Amino acid sequence: MTQITDIIANQHKLLDSLKQTITAEKDALIAQDADQLLRLANEKAQLLNEIKLGDTELAAHPDLGRLTQEPQLIALVDDAKQALAECKQLNEQNAALIEHSMASVNRFSQALQASRNASSLTYDGKGMTSTISTLGNNLKA
Image (cartoon, rainbow, N blue to C red; front, top):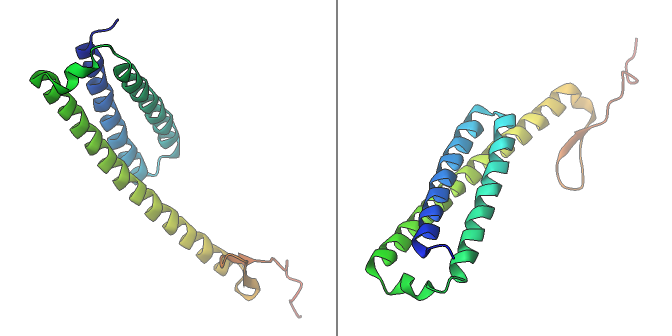
């Protein structure tokens, strides 16, 4: 069986990678690089799965009790929890940035629809603007 310290060390490594991925995700959001965002989303999901597997392995480890008894292991667990909290905070910031970007794209889309054919602007059941193209049927010579 894997040593409990090795599992915790691997969790630290995974959390560091997750933090780097989330930071890169923020840069990709700012740069509006969709391809990079998709790659990073897959990488983030894979890292989260590996972290979850590590947690499962820790929970099933026969030396689990040592994590709450030995000061060195307590410190390592606290460091991991702090790193996870930092990742969560960075991820929440990215979520807010995504929401802001989506709202901006929605406003831009509505502005484009309005400028495309202002006379046929209407609203759908969700309050979103929509245009019905008349293809010039209302022109008078």
